[in-house]
Amino acid sequence: MKESLRQAMAWLHTWLGLTFGWLLFAIFLTGTLSYFKEEISHWAHPELRVRPLDTRAALDRAEAYLRQAAPGAATWYVMPPDERQPGLEVMWAGAPGSGKRFVSKLLDPATGQEALTRDSRGGDFFYRFHYELELGFPWGRWLASLAAIAMLVALVSGIITHKKIFKEFFTFRPGKGQRSWLDGHNAVAVLALPFHLMITYSGLVIFMAMLLPATLATVYKGQPAAFYQEVFPNAFPGPAKGEAGAPLGLASLYDRAMMRWPGARLSRVEVQHPGDAAERVVFYRHGGDRIAYLPGNSLAFDGVSGALLETSVPDGGALLIAGGFYGLHMGQFANGMERWLYFIFGLGGTAMIGTGLVLWVSKRQLKHAREPRLPFGLRMVGVLNMASMAGLPLAVGAFFWANRLLPLQLEHRGGWEVRVFFLTWLAVLIHALLRQGRRGWLEQLSLGAGLYLGLPLLGIFTTERGLPVAIAQGDWATAGVDLTALACGLALLWLLRKVALRGALPAVGSQPAKVPS
Image (cartoon, rainbow, N blue to C red; front, side):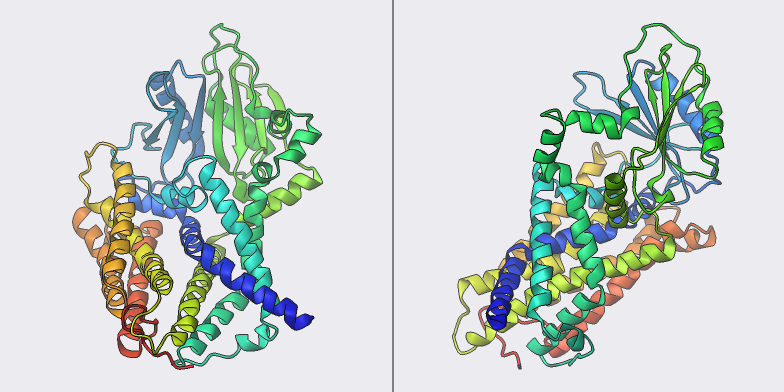
């Protein structure tokens, strides 16, 4: 009975991993990059200088800008700078018929003027791709959630399948072909197994209202919007009075908020009905101030009198548990060292998926070693492996190069960065179809290594904040991205050498390689 269960779990583990492996590889890799979303966004805007933080002054300047630029907007949003993101972002709803849901501007926090910086999606692109796959709401989130369910089942079935999984963790036999890939797959899986389980399950918890809508519909009697009004009461203002009011000002209200939240960071400030006698100002506490991410944690003030209207501090057990999973998944509470641990474990999860896909190919390649040509399905798996494991990092590198090379005045420049990413990914897929086998791997890995190793040099010639300048000025966000690019380039060179000298990857193509057992 035990062996029968283990065999069933092995079948489930294998085929779920193959079916969703390429999608999960992309989700894990972009999710890993998202842990440094703010740093990547800062690197993508090299014109924006790092300045000493003064949240109070930044809010005052943002308010002055918004009263001039968007006096008729129903709501203003201000995202103050912090130690990871030096820009001051303001946002308001777009005018009807403009085609824009929101208008967003990046300001210099020292002057309150629009920052003369390039248009770029920066780290926000990887963050949103991680859970929306550039498919928009809700289709991308549903597909990402389906992949997360498959990942969770694959993890559990993998634990059941490998009865000696912890023993095998301490066993690695390099240069043994299929056995080496199995050892590597087991090692990276067991090393960060708690992380893999947490990150997968917590991702599903984040979308639980979308995945399990019947609960809210039942409890709130067919009115699920009432749930959000209960959890986020400050996000639903009353009607405007239609009379002009004399606002107290964001700087003064910030002082009052800090009296209740000494030393707290802010994620955003929301001004509802600006300029009206019913103006309402809501301060939202930064999710990184505690492990449990509670986006409804806020203070609402009357914008005219300065009176505290409402304090929303979610403290229910269910919300704290859900917020705990949310916070663990997002990792906003993490300091620099902890964020790097998230990054390393995320790369481990990506490697676990990649090694599993390569292992699937190497196992089946042996069965057809005597045939003149591999089956079509096996060749296509090899093509998709190459396009994902070698091609996706190459497309990420092309995105970074596009940030430095696209003309600064190009209309919709941030969108063109995304187009470069997808066009590069499509090109490497076509290349994988035309150059199946080890030659294709060598060419894609070589190009990827060149892109990452050349990125810091490109920054020196195309911006005034290249790697040496960033290090000299203590701008470690910019320098960190360049140094990580160098590390990625060296890692790809190492893998390139392995493929060239030892055939580290199975050459799936017209002439199958014999992989030792």
